[in-house]
Length: 123
Image (cartoon, rainbow, N blue to C red; front, side, top):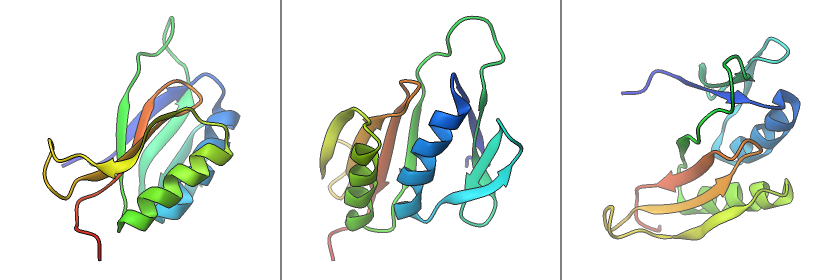
């Protein structure tokens, strides 16, 4: 249902470095780069970062990226840890969502709650 999403970044370069690393294991990459505004996706930009354009600080967002398998979720977390991201939740099953919901959660440089999730059983 989501066509695209955009979040504000206090330091677009730091956020770009983070997303370059954590989206790669999920098949995501920079597809458009307008300097401080960058679009990521697999075939078209569906996730955007850009500079803060409103007064005050941006409120925390929760962003969940799809992983093709559970190994992708683990690779996402490893990439996030390599960037120095705060780990909110290690990869695990979340049966309260559904029996095969496997996800990991981290904070991006702006404090957003970023998740990688796989909805299929371990193969």
